[in-house]
Image 1: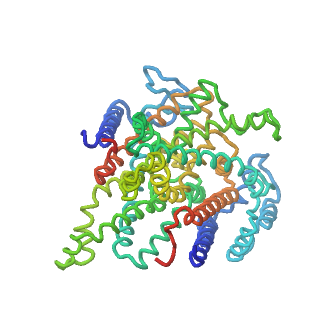
Image 2 (image 1 turned 135 degrees about the vertical axis):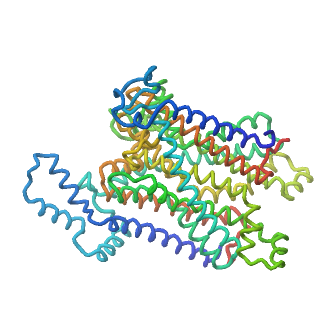
Image 3 (image 1 turned 90 degrees about the vertical axis):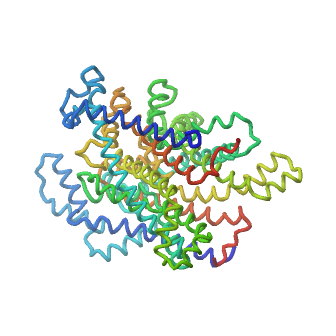
Amino acid sequence: MNKSYLVTRLVTFVIILWLASSVIFILPHLAPGRNPVRERIVQQASLGSGRVEGIEKMVAAFERDYGLDKPVWKQYFTYMGKLVRLDLGLSLALYPAKVIDLIMQALPWTIGLLGISTLLAFGFGSLAGALLAWPKSPGFIQWLFPPLMVMSAIPYFLLGIFLMTVFAFMLKWFPIGGGSSLTSVPDWSFTYIKQILHHAVLPGLAVVLSGIGFWALSMRGMMITVTGEDYVNFAEMRGLGSRRIFFQYAMRNAILPQVTALALALGFVVSGLVLVEWVFRYPGIGSLLFKAIAAFDYFLIYGVVFVLILGIALTTLFLDLIYPLLDPRIKYERE
Amino acid sequence: MKENPILFIGLLMSIALLATWLTGMIISDREMAEPISGPPYAPPSSEYLLGTDAQGRQMLPLMVWGVPLTLRMGLIAGSLGLLIGTILGFTAGFFGGIIDTIIRSLSDIVLTIPALAVLVVVASTISADGLSVESMAFIIAALAWMWPTRTIRSQVLSMRERDYIDVARLSGLNNFEIIVKELMPNLLPYLASSFVGAVAAAILAAIGLEALGLGPQHQPTLGMTIFWANYFGAVMSGWWWWYAPPIVLLIWLFVTLYAIAAGLDQWANPRLKKVTQ
C-alpha cells in the first residue's frame, strides 16, 4: 500500500477526532447561561438544610478546579491539550473521581461484550448468509431466512428486554443484570470468571441474535452477486470441489464488502450496545453514560462520548488499513 | 402477492396496526393517557384494559396516543434525512470529480460517529426539560442523511453511463432536467425503500433517546413509557403490562417497516429474489 494513502487516512482520522471533540466542546457553550458547577452546588445545597453560606466562593473554587474561569478560547486550547493526554477532566457527580478513571474501569466490560458478540454475529451471520445464497446448500437452511429477517429488524435493546423478561425473570436461568454477582469479590478466580460469563450471556445474546440477521442478509446479497461471476463458473467447469469453491472463491470475495460494511456499521452497533448495557445494568460504558445523563454529569457525558468516537475511529482506521491485505486488487492509488 | 411476499406481509402488518390503532382511538380519548387518569399500578382488568402505570396513566390509551407521536417524528426525521441524502447523493453521483470526493468523505466521516452519542450530548445540553418532538426530529435527521447519500450515489453512478442518459443529453436537456426527469423516476422504488428505512432508523434513534430519558417529558411517547418503566423497576416488580405493550408495539412497528423496505428493495432490484428456484 502506498504512502500517500496511509497519510491521507491518518489525516482523516485526526480530522474526525478534532471535529468531534470540537463539537462536543462548543455545544454546551452554545446554550447560554448554563453553569454546570453552580447548578450542581445549588442542587446539593437544596438537598441539605437549604441555608449555605459562601455559595459563590464554592462556585468560584470549583470553577478554578475545572478551569471554567478562563476565557473561552483559552479553555478550548486547554481542553485540546488535555484531550491529547487523555485527561478528560473531573466528574461532576462522583467528584473528585477523574473521568478517565471511571471510563477505564468500565471500558474492559464493554470491549469484552462488544468485541465478542460482534465477532460472533459477524462470523455466524456471514456464514449463514453465504449458505443462504449458495445453491448447493442443504434445503433446511432456507427455513432460517424468515426468522433471521425478523430478528434483524428488532433493535438490540428491545430484544434485550424481551430476553431478560423470559430467561432471567420468568425462567430464572440467567441473572437479571449486572456484570457479576453482587456478593462476590473481583479476582481472577475461576468462580468469578464463571460469573462474568454467566452474566454476559443475555446481553451478548441480544446483540448476537439481532446482529446475525443483519450480517446474514447483507452477506446473502453479496454472495448472490459473486456466484454469478465468471470466475466461479470457471472454477466449477474446472471441476473444483464444491466446498473449495464456496470458501475460497465465493466467500473470500464476498466478505470484502462485508468488512467495509462492518466498519461503517460500527457506530450503529455501539449505539445499540449502549442501550443493551443500560437494560441489563451491565457495568460498561453504556451504563456509565446512562448514569452520567441521569446525574447531569456533563463532563462524564462528554468524556464517554469522546472515548466512544475515539474507539470507533480507531477500529475503522484499523479495518481500512488491513483491507488491502484482504483484497490484493486494491491499490489505493489516486482515483 | 406471490412475487413479492415480503412487501405483502409488510402491508398486511401495517393494515393490522392501523386497524388496532383506529379501534383504540374509538375506545379511548386523550385524557386517559395523562397521569392520574386511573389508579396507579392497576393490573389489566375489564375497566382498564391494559392496566395503569405508576403515575396513573392508562396503558391502552397511552399506546394509542403514543404511536402517532412516534410515527410523526419518524416521518419528519426520515423525510428530512432522505431529502438531504437525495440531494447530496444525486449531486455526488452525477457530477463526480471533486464534488463527489468532498461529499463522500464528509458522509464517511459523519458515519463513523455513533449517532446515539452525539444525540445524547446535544439532547442533554439543549434542554433539561426534554426535547420536543420536532427538535428531536431535526437532530436525528442531521445524522440520518449519510446512508441514503451513499446508496443513492452508488445507484446514480451506475445509471449515469446508460444510453438513455446520452439520448436525453443529446435532446438538449440540461443537467438538472436529466436528474429530475430521467434518473429520479427510475430510482423511485429505490428511493421509497430508502425512505422507509430512514423512517425506521429515525424511530429507532428516537426510542433510544427517549428510553434514556432525554425525550419530551410531558408527552406520552412510546420511548418515554419504556423509560418510566425502567425508572420504576417494572421488570423486577412484575408489572409486565407496563413495558410489554410498548415493546410489542415497537417490535411490530419495526418489523413492519423493515418488511416494507425490504419488499420495496426487492421490487427495485429483482436480482435479490430467492436464489434456489
